[in-house]
Amino acid sequence: MALLLPLNSTAFGRHADAVRQGFAAAARVAGKNAPPLRIYPVNEDSLNVLTVYEQALESGARVVVGPLTRAGVAALYD
Image (cartoon, rainbow, N blue to C red; front, side, top):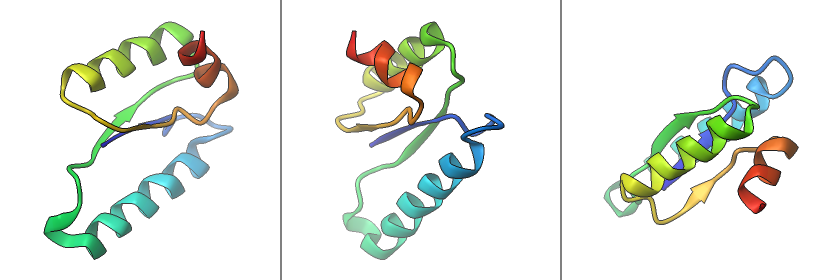
């Protein structure tokens, strides 16, 4: 599972960290049954989001959560 999160964003960083913490807590509760979790920091640049998304897929991500920002989601949708 890949989390594409704008962790360094002034507008979304706090929310992105809350999502990260929530997934990490769920993984701890699930223990060895939890899917592997990888965090991918992204910024609000569309090219960055697309590049990081491709990296996540190439690394074997079967589920991708994020990137949380409207511009980032639009980049993946197009």
